[in-house]
Image (cartoon, rainbow, N blue to C red; front, side, top):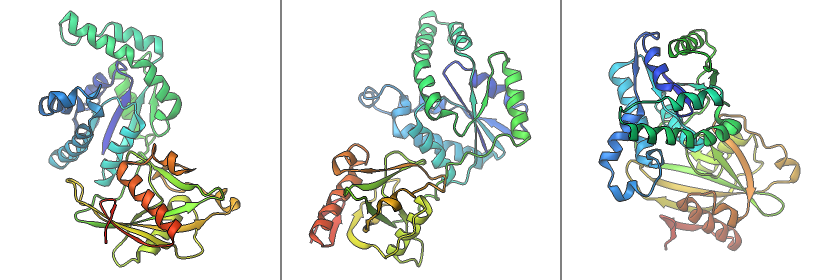
Amino acid sequence: MIVWINGAFGAGKSSTARELVDLIPRSTLYDPEATGDAVRRLVPAERLAEVGDYQDLPIWRRLVVDTAAALLAEVGGVLVVPMTLLRQEYRDEIFGGLAARRIEVRHILLTPEETILRQRIDTREEYGDPEADARVRKWCHAHVDPYRAALGRWLAADAHTVDNSALTAAETAGAVADAIRTGLVAPCGIVQTPEPTGETVAAGVLLFDEQDRFLLVDPTYKPGWEFPGGVVEPGEPPARAGMREVAEEIGLALDAVPRLLLVDWERPEPPKYGGLRLLFDGGTLRAADAGRLSLPGAELRGWRFVTEEEAAELLPPVRYRRLRWALRARERGTVLNLEAGIPVG
């Protein structure tokens, strides 16, 4: 199990975490800041210059998941992780990666009042160097508004909040420990299937509305939007797998087996294995059917019907190329064979 302590920079996460490991039996402190320091030494300077924060580097997010999983395998028990996550897609990616390893996350959010938060930031002295400490304080103040924006949109949705405005670090840790012990903090609902150990076959389904827009879904466990669908299980027909995934993800039972539009071979790009990606035409949904769409599980955050142009802003490049050729196949009434998003044969 992981106890992830989130909150604004300066909210008291690290001091609370240090106190918390003394209150939870068999717990170990893991600070992803250490992983960030390693990334700064590993990644070329020109790549670091392209981002404003090491959290923006996919390698940091991947290493946080891998390090947490490896540390838990090594020491067992509970991992206490103090780290600010203000971008929902990063939270989704990291928590989803942990879920894929069957690691439960208890999400704690420290929420001191803003005036208290800014006062604490003003008194931060971490390095004993006036210039370095001033830079840290400036950084923390600059991220208060993004924290407030995230708090208003999504941050507290799956977290147990603790207002530590009037609490010491020890008192905050005690409140967190009590909440975990009494079951007030439920496991985070983000889920993900285990990571593959070889090439996979996945089936996606394009569903259209009466304006000929198509449906995309927003997964909670990885960045970027997707087509409804998922990995084909052993012994399962791909088209039926697409139908099953549509029912599980958006609560819609398709009346007919969808028609194949394309087969795309996705090349392995370590650590990803690649494999075959199939897209099917699920047909046009009547307005009444579209109005009954739901999100019965925790894997999706939302759904929307979009045009081809709008999809370019939502889909990762490889999925967008696949989509464009699937739409052309639908227009021509044919089936296309792709390799890495490019028609062949």
